[in-house]
Length: 167
Image (cartoon, rainbow, N blue to C red; front, side):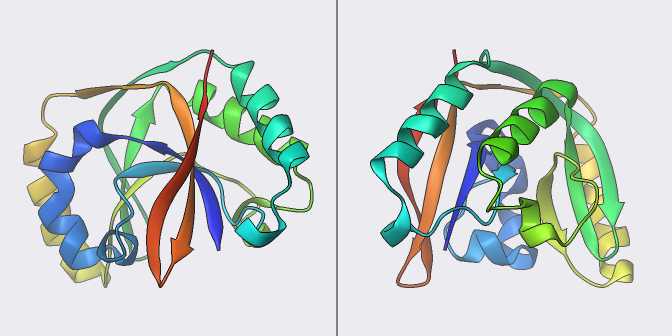
């Protein structure tokens, strides 16, 4: 299993405890991130020409200066929105278009919304977590993202395999 993400280490200190308890990806060593494309090509099938195509697409986009302060929810998911989201969405759409055999989230959702997952839990649990996170993110947290990271699972743990620089 593999995926392409924008790693946001600036969020780690404010989210680590909640993510460790309530985000399955965090329990498997995935850092705070915005998904660009998941699932991606499995590592054994990833060819040099796939890497070259990915590098070309990603390299056409400038580094991203993002801000995080807005919380939102999907059913049973609490997440943090990047601001601005437009450049993130444009990058994700371009990468998905370059790899049509890898539809975002396996084609499960019609609309892809850029976000950092904080917690997956029943709604009453999310109510309490959201209140905590609103306090922590009362001031925006800024993050500069200069690459798309390729992560893959190895022995049921996520590990970073490679980075593809943004322009």
